[in-house]
Image (tube, rainbow, N blue to C red):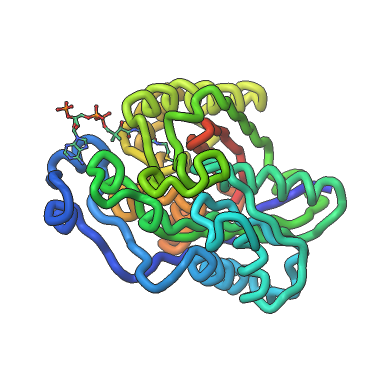
Length: 320
Ligand code: ACO
């Protein structure tokens, strides 16, 4: 049994926050944000929480697959902004919203969450345990950033993307390979220190903290290695890839990794200018954007990559 990508969907909250709007909140400017990151706007959830975004993205993926919630055997939600910080999982809340009683679990792998969820879905399907696994990357990062810290609050946005991964006998359409990694020695580089049992509820440190420059350097190095490894071990080059769809944290990271694997610019998908960094949601949201404008065709080979807190990082070769 193999696992294939069956459907994609996404949802973003209505409110848009521009760089100009941010100039009124912190000491920043459009030029700095654009030059350093490529970000112009991001969507912000006001009344909605992560499970609301996840639920709406899931409905979109189900509609695009012509499937009903009952057709799903398992739900995996990748998020670092769960509705509740211990329990229940956001996946359980989403299952309830979809009106189904199914195994449901959250994955915490920061911006690499979608690739980790994809790897889990693939393993569950290849083991013969399930036929259709709904994976969702959903975040309301606006609720964990410090709106007084210009070094982080300008970078992030809210949104959700969902995909359905299904069983198939046809190896031609199967997910080709997934590479996932983690190295805890970098844990202090990207952290919300006051939201766990270690510091309890240290209200001074409940916001996302990032050593941006150090993170940037490790991200470029590890991502370039991961995408090189996955291409090499599958005897592929950038010529075999139709679309390079990386995690959207910063256009400079995307550009550096694309150069490292000689990926032509026209194959690199960029959405960071519209949505900012939406962590685990950014890859499925980018896939969805490509699908909605008719650029992504069935069978197109996608190269995905992501890097995030932990540090975690990884890549995947996936026929659409
Ligand atoms: N507006 C204006 N000036 C600013 C701002 C801002 N919003 N933020 C920082 N600055 C200033 C700094 O104070 C600093 O000033 P100084 O030189 O007087 O001290 C200067 O700009 C340069 O700051 P750097 O941090 O060195 O800027 P850098 O070029 O590294 O860009 C950035 C910062 C965009 C954060 C970059 O380092 C980056 O993208 N890092 C990686 C982020 C990432 O990929 N994270 C992983 C995924 S996220 C996840 O897992 C949730």
